[in-house]
Amino acid sequence: MSIAAIAERRTQVRYFIIGFIFIVTSINYADRATFSIAGSDAARELGLSPIATGYILSAFAWAYALAQIPGGALLDRFGTKRIYAGAIAVWSVFTFLQGFAGFIAGLSAVTMLFALRFLVGLSEAPSFPGNARIVAAWFPSSERGTASAIFNSAQYFSLVAFAPLMGWVVHNHGWRAVFYVMGGLGVLAALAFVRFIHDPVRHPDINQAELDYIERGGGLVALDQANASKGNTFRWDNLKQLLTNRMLLGIYLGQYCINVLTYFFATWFPIYLVKERGLNILEAGFAAAAPAMCGFIGGVLGGYISDWLLKRTGSLTIARKTPLLIGMILATLIIACVYIEQEWLVVTVMAIAFFGKGIASLGWAIISDVSPRQFAGLTGGVFNMFGNCAGIVTPIVIGYLVAATDSFDSALIFVGVHCLLTIFAYFVIVGPIRRVELQ
Image (cartoon, rainbow, N blue to C red; front, side):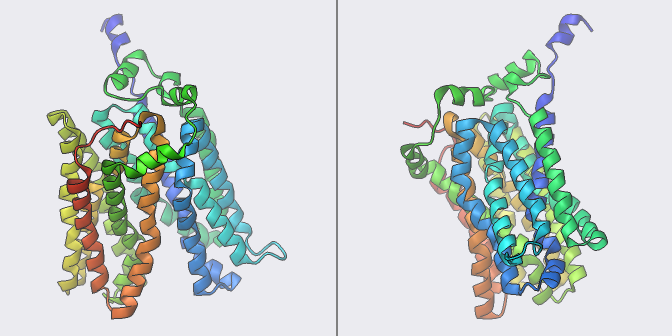
């Protein structure tokens, strides 16, 4: 091969970048789940009531949703690298400190754990908007579906990879150790982030061929530099435009509805298997892993299909909406569980529904496609705020439905209807998918 041909060959640094973001996002989700793993032993040692435990578990979701807009604004103002790396370090320190609950005189364990979980939620807020900014900078439009699906699928991978590890740590070294281990791992991740994550134009390992390829395909290769030079400070009129744009409102509603399904699986699904279907805790644990793995496979597959369609059709609208439609139709099968008696078939249908949810989870790719160039972080923050409101609403509504009917039938219908609402949001409200230009 000639020297000229070697010089023209593109580097593949963007694949390393998305792989690294996948690992960081897996740690992110694992840190959210630390108290879920340690909670039983912690409650026994600290004398926590179920109500107190519930408040501690809720602290993260409230803070995480509330901090999305400020987190996105900070990313736009100061750049992805500084804010994201700082966020990883801060949430890891707060995770580490939870291991000291009950040791500080005059401060109750409940108060300390609630406050630290709340602070973890606040500090994790820039993570997903930051992921969207990195994808917008590092990937051409034709690869964003797959890239976004990869980092988004970390939520499923984290359950498979870190839950057994954290369970082993708690079993062998006590519940406090899981916070020390995960906090320390997060600090190492923050240091690695500073070392390896840069804008494409600043990365030492990228060559001009890859840089040109990304930029020609619509990648915002100098996103942080451009934002810094324009002084993109937060303004209320910009936020108002993001909240009154019809296309964006449809996308926000769609993400909320998709996350209703996500939070059903994350909160009530194991309880449903035990109370409604008669499985024991061990059986429910294995059964819950099947939908998680199917969601992971569906998430990666949905991104691949979307990018393949974009290359074939050249239409963002067709490429992003087609997998979403297929996935949400599959996800509505969750309603069929109301009429199914066999436990194995229920788990199978739930796995198909979560597989469909994974295929349809292209929201972060769409946000990378449509965000105003100067406010990608803020747009992602608003998007993630709406999506994670489902984490507050869904567990509460399902709890009331189950209490009122002594059955999960109405809860399953509630979740399935939101799958149909997702289709309505994207196909009636959103319209053509295109990048927003702020006035």
